[in-house]
Image 1 (cartoon, rainbow, N blue to C red):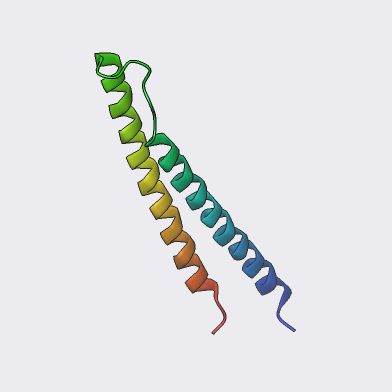
Image 2 (cartoon, rainbow, N blue to C red):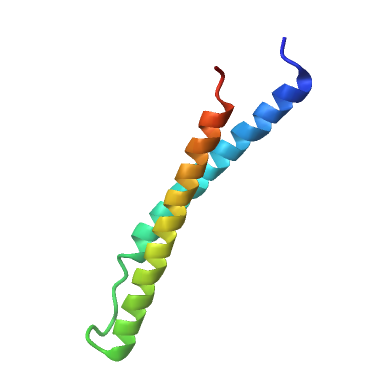
Length: 82
């Protein structure tokens, strides 16, 4: 039987892996939703600003999703049994 402290540490690490994987999924879905915004009056200055802002937010959310996915993969590789 494994040492109790080691089992707790593995459970905490597993929770971090699943949490960061969930965060990656949320950020990627949010990025996709942000990139598909539609303006009421296309061609106006306000609409252009709104579209540029939505595109920048979608880009940042995409990068955050990729970062959380990489973090999740790295934690999984560090915690797996050999």
